[in-house]
Length: 530
Image (cartoon, rainbow, N blue to C red):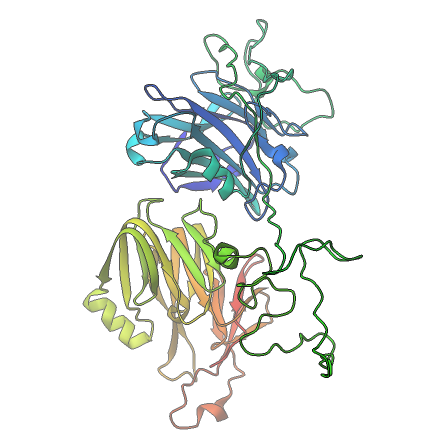
């Protein structure tokens, strides 16, 4: 039975089907509207670093044919064949998109969907309507993305600028050339042979032989093959990574690079004025000092110090700090800043009070009370959290005191985290206080928060943490431990530093925790101790 996804839902492909040779169908239409449906093959930075993996009507397949455009069939406006086990290692995401060709907005589109079919049977479908969009002219419908294993996510996010904005988001650009003769290699129409009784199942490993006809892929049956659609553009669209070059320093004519110098780098420093000694060479591996108020040698005029010389002007100076590419509910902007899109998934977020640094859209912030019992438990255990509830349609940026932030996605499993290290989490997660008993601890016990279910919890650490496997000889200081798998057994080590505990007013958090558990359990430790 097919699983129905909503915007923001995601799952492992292996949980949907055991096959890796998949059919992807997209259905989208609207009165007087024409849509172009494409697939972008992106690298680990979610950029189109190889334009051979931009699959559309003028380029119907990738070099090794792991992604193929099949055309309209079986009620789908457009369809693809995706063979996951043949996708090269440099491709980490496949983004299926729909863009408007001509006038109109996505809000005018009727009911549509993106679906995955394996072995002729539909395994997942994400249905949408035009009411979910406003002025967008390009939307990202769904993604296959590689996160230790291949996963599928229902996205439903768009851009007002159409194909041009979509390409720029993926690191490419649009260049319209002069009209050219139509290509000889047009996308083949999908026409099942008459002797085929039933499509075989997907998932068989690709054999080193010639590609089989499209009916062997297991696409859903259609009453009749759809006619081949003619190209809708008069000129081909070219996507290539943008590579701006730095101009010459302000007030100086452009200079040819010297022998061994990379084009775009700054010129060598000028000679000192007459009668002055040149500055001494700095120690090996250090940068020479720069007088206050002056630009470093070779840096274009107007670019702040510390910013790479990627071009002059305000836009070039701010380019390294632009908002990271979207497409997921939780997105790390950098090591200390997290972005959550409340429009994806349709569920509120609980975050530590005061952690919001900026938000976009219509977002409401409300106090999240723990109730009388919750306050009693929090006051007794030290695990009380002052939370705010974020709801609405928009994006919220979260941070706290420059701590490193790590989103942890739970899919039915659990994790234990100290409340001090929790920044935010999806309200869909179940959470409770757990007690760790042991002798020699002031108060008689230690407490932690256990999260379980499906959703994301954002953990903050002092510095970059390390994840260690749990063995019978795994010990950690309770001040440094951040989290551990909920299946681990935690006990108090007998090697307690009692002499330090004897000092009046000491926190007592100098005991060691011993972790035990089956293979696969883990403990997270930060490089920090109170």
